Length: 353
Image 1: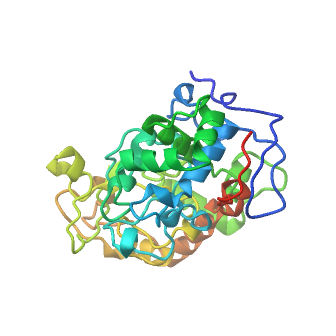
Image 2: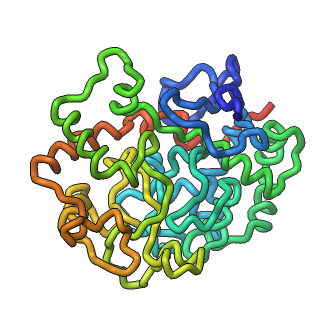
Image 3: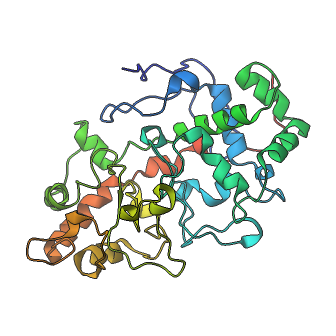
């Protein structure tokens, strides 16, 4: 058992953040495990979160020098106010406004994930930035050239020394710093969380209670609590899109995985539209209508959607749909998407001791 509640906790260190708000934390608490969450999957023993490492990771997350022409940062497609996804775009828009083929997944609660991206093609959070940096439609850069640019920058050698002990800038340190920032992106302060933790005054309305009952009966197999994803890959009856994205099959080369995509978390759905791997649905209502009556049958359709009477989808009355939507509202965490801890820092005039 990993004692993760104490790893990385640096109580008493003064937190300094340049941009966003006058109301900032006085201390940097490091990574803490929410009381109602399971133990994380990430191995913190090889990369404990420190204040200096997190600050470096945040600076790198918003650093456009990670792209070929110094215009695209991680934060360009992973926007805090959208729960670190690309709000309003069906697919990602990268360098030179090139279009990707998938909607960026939110960067939230990644410490509990075993694999990453819609197809699970990356199994280590520390390696996930390589995809974006080297993708010709995202950053179109090489890791060695990123390292060169960081070494030539007046601030970064000192920042790496503060985080890792020496001025040496390597790809491993670059990715560990980015992971420290992403690991801190924990969203666990929704109304649902407060009710589950029996916090004072927290209670579901009657509609939310009924919606929660329906959710547990019809939705929780895939969107299991408290992460609201079972981290599996499923074909959920979407019509193949124009690029014929085959999903998990492209990684496993297993025909049974054709058109299966990772089950996304439902947390912060209000901020992450549009929905599905290709952003085809603009509203939650449209998503629920897909499950109610719009699913397309195929050989690899997940069996969970096959009903005893031969129909496919999730049976749902109008009243059940209304109650479900009321419950799903309790999964939005406004404090997370407005937390100044994750806001873009000032890039100039940084003083490093």
